[in-house]
Length: 564
Image (tube, rainbow, N blue to C red; front, side, top):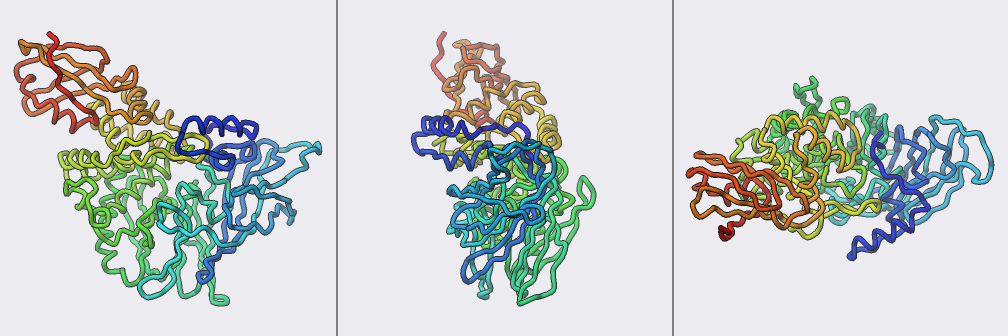
């Protein structure tokens, strides 16, 4: 269950939330549908998902699917009308409860309101565990440019065999199966995924393969079981002419099962490229703590799109090349030393899948930390200088066109700067803490303290500030909630015996401590918005303050004319 810290928005607040969203963002007008999708409405309150049992059968030629999903849930408050999400043009055929009880329902755009009880009748409410089954069919939205637009991918491999996959982060799992499509509520007891596919193909999903039925009418049913809570958008369906092999890793929690599913003609090249998985997992466990899903194993699955962090079934489509499809996003050369999709998407097992943001607006919790996992992997394998260079090189990709945190309650994520700016913010905080082991303990602590939870940005901010002993609240405000790059202004006194400095272009109270260090000297500049002076030695005055500081911290440094 991932319900900790959620913001409850009732149906009576639709109009006020809608108006507020319009005022906050002049570029996009939000609708009632956005609020239904992105908030905890009255129709999502009172019931907590315990398990999903999904069965789906795709038809390749018609690009349609037929399926059903049984939701086991704990009803904690009386629910008369339940909100189930299923995006058009998919069609709900019927909804049933225990003993084949048939429920009436009505559609409202991408939402289905299920009428469980008469809204006027009196009844004695008893909390308890209940089930609901939704039968549906139709032609789901097709992804034209997965994973960025989302939906189902219907392609063929180079031999002409069907190759089907899903990618729906942001857009939502309800693009292909009915669910409670909000990140705050994951099924406590996991999920069973049954995929009916042609018997000439393999169907691969999350967790462990429990059973493959005998061929019947040209099809087999592949049953996969997930033991752990799972993000809705992480549930995946992959169908193709796959082959696979198994391996194991001795990790922090014992033996971790590894599986690799690739198209049969890519077996040899995949075995070579996937040798990077074990050092990656060792590195990520070193920095973040134990892999969060030992019960479900770790899997790489080849897909017809670039990649996605599907929990325990990471989607891989990087063409078996190092870098990002053969390019280095940092421009330093270090990004070509490893396969971007293997490192990055696997990092999401910790940040995104283990720790999940309650609201899409806080998606930087997934992408900022995972972007920084690339830097940490580089450090673990190639050393600290290489890592610093890689992280600094990524800054050229920062646009500062919008804030990293999006608008809450309307399923709206923030700027794409959540990746590179988010990672550089974490690097900046690490340098300010000035204790690498403490920083590593914080990263590991986040994954143990918020194990299998959905959280808010504020919870993570408070945890980092508390564990580091430094109040970083204004630092988070600066980087997450503004597009301004803080400027450190300084000058030396005329006799070169003092340095004066202050912060500008920053939020009130900005308090980032800065340490300038080279092989000859070290200089500590306490945070301040007003001019402050400290004495300096001759060695300190010779330090290359601007290049050294700007490489370690995501700031701008300016030497100004002496004021004395």
